[in-house]
Amino acid sequence: MSATRTRYTSNTTLPRQQSYIGGRYLRNQSGATFVTRHPGNDRAICEVETAGEAEVNAAVAAAHAAFDGWSTTRAVERGNILRRAARILRQRNDELAALETLDTGKPIAETAVVDIATGADVLEYFAGVAQAIHGQHVDLPPAAFAMVRREPLGVVAGIGAWNYPIQIAMWKSGPALACGNTMVFKPAEQTPLTALKLAEIYSEAGMPPGVFNVVQGDAATGKALVTHADVAKVTLTGSVETGKIVMAQASSDLKKVTLELGGKSPIVIFDDASIDNALNAALVANFYSTGQVCSNGTRVFVQRGICDEFVDRLAARARAIRVGDPFDPVTQMGPLVSREHYDKVCRYMQVAKNSSARHVCGGEVFKNGPLASGLYVTPAIFADCSDDMEFVREEVFGPLMSVLSFATEEEAVARANATNFGLAGAVFTRDFARAHRVATRLQAGIVWINDYNITPPEVPFGGYKQSGIGRENGLQAIEHYTQVKTIYANLGDVAETY
Image (cartoon, rainbow, N blue to C red):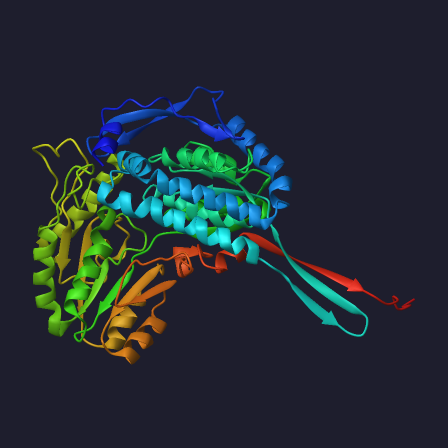
């Protein structure tokens, strides 16, 4: 790992980055650029050329031109290319993880074992699914039958979030490409670098030019992509606010839309649960990736009989979390992703401190020492919270945990569901019947029993209510990247009606 750390230090000056269109890098016409920064010290990493209307048009045209060939490529060959890409990704894991850490500020201890590896798992999964996509035959005696075909949509616009840049690019491109679609992907402007590496790797794996393209930019670039007449579908991971904007933009010509949005997910811990397991889950569900995970369980409901003990033990564990340089292998929590997001999270920390909730620990910034130039904040826990507090209701997307006590199962379920979000949830109990009863009643797209944030590629992931539309991963994703065509065949004569 030391060699990789040397290669991507925050003082490294990377060349100017461009969009990747039609199998090559393409200079933009406007000359406009933006800067991506390392959150560990807030220094500039490199300039990135903004894709304007001309570049978006070129990317969509490249994807459109590639569609006929890719959609008629044998499924086994599409799968083989995705498998080769997954193999290359794993071979280059350390290099890519370091670049991801540079761009996002996530600890190398995370990116080296999660971000690339889990994305490669998704590519391999959909590489296998490609050959299993099928329609059906419907017999219609005495002299007809129908075929139901599942066909690709066309050009898919993918818009990524900044918390898992390369993983999200693979979560979206894996099923889209396996189904025979082509894609134009726009990474978040805060974290634009690793999607370009994925594009290079796809090309190296044998993917034809134009099948996967990357355009760089902010909301204006996204709008040009979403509203393009030759884009058949939009898939976005982002905030609820962004999701509403994108859905409105896509509605002008009724594009298909998949949205994976935010959450304020509940963890319900009953007094018969394994406290050790519940502690481990609550900590990872709030402080992993500096709390910047959409499915995080930031409302922790603890039954009254164990609440005081739980909070005391939780505080001791949270205070011991090592906040520091994300390139240091012992660091457990790095900085927040950007200055804008840092200011937002710090505002919520202050709101929590000014509330009547009990400030257990954390929420401090670093004003002196080696971390002072970065975007760091210590993991915070607030207890004795009430459901109506601003920081309890709204998605903070940072390391701020709210602990709320409850008395009965009915109360816990009702309060857990009293939100416009519905992405995830969890229940901790040794009572088998209660575990399944509560999991069934929680209004969320994914619910864990005695665990948290485990998302294997075989299972669908997505939200209820304002947490999204559609599903990522699992066989259900195929439904969102294909369309159904019915072909009716008459083997007899057409009746004379007139």
